[in-house]
Amino acid sequence: MYKLLGDLRGYLKWQDITTDSMIFRMHNIFTTVLLLTFSLIITATQYVGNPIACIVESGLRKNAINTFCWITSTFTMPDAFNRQVGKEVAHPGIGNDFNDESARKYYTYYQWVCFVLFFQAIMCYVPQWLWNTWENGLMRSIVMGMNHQLCDEKEKLKKKSVMMNYIMKHRTTHISYVYRYYACEAICLLNILLQLYCMNRFFDGEFMGYGLRVLQYADKPQEERVDPMVYIFPRVTKCIFHKIGPSGSVQKHDSLCILPLNIVNEKTYIFIWFWYLILTVLLVGLLAYRAAIIFAPAIRPRLMHLAARGTSKETCRSVSRKTDLGDWWLLYCLGTNLDSIMYREILQELAKKLGDQNSQVVA
Image (cartoon, rainbow, N blue to C red; front, top):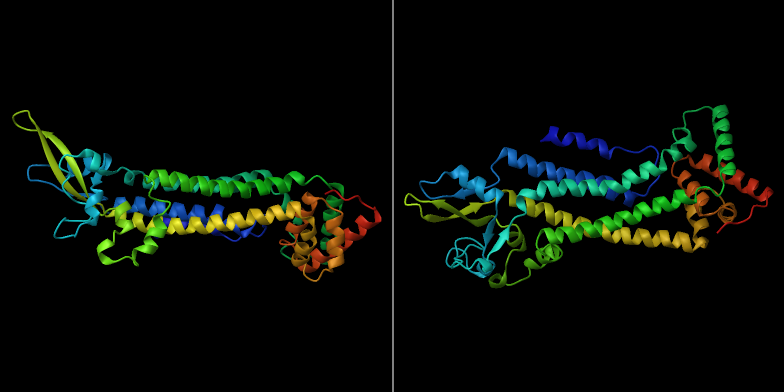
């Protein structure tokens, strides 16, 4: 198992150049690794042990019944979850259906869980792939290795001069840079909402309230308790297998099937439910914050002052006032990738050059 999951550690390595936010990485990197880990664990569990074990009558091949029930579907009786186990029913949800097929609740998802988790992981990585394609190493090219503080003073001055020349020469050309990044953050929120909807459909409308029902489960009276994890991910289900008898008539065999894999599934999806809820709240707050940056330019100098430790507020106001949103965002990102002293010097020199040129403000 360690070797199976060891290769995923490479996705969590520290980035020496950052062009995105922590919440953006939580969605694209951490969530992707998390979902891939769950998918591999569930897949490995199938290899380590049998994901289904059915109790069959004598004369029937157990392996054949196990395979049949796994690739088709099993079912429970929803009304049997409210009955007393050991007296009225053998297991939660296991009762007599009296040949009423409409009263059965079928479970067809379990053989698809590992594939769905893998697909979800791919969808979570799409915004990161888009941003990497659009960004194309621009920030790394501008920084030129000055985030490591290993170059001598002469080389540092030369690189700073090259950086200043780039900023002045390419003014007002970075508006697509910032809007593409903000679009990627919006795609993250859209992806989370779409995945929540799809998971809810995947579990027949039971997923949206799954976490809340788990939290409320302990507060309910004992006689009214129905474990939501057992209801959505039952440990024991029923399966009907039809066979041709010696006389040519159709024989019906009713089997109980144990689903040990659902012990993993129920823990996996309760964690996903809470994690996606946290991500949704964080992403909504992040997009509101981005909207404030776009439509309230007055907050930009304050944000730049927080990023440029030791730089005067007047310098930050001067630079923010004489740059458009794209150039401001590029300078703001430089603050997370450069030494604070170097960053302060660049802002001071830039404010001086912009003042000398009497630049026009582009809102």
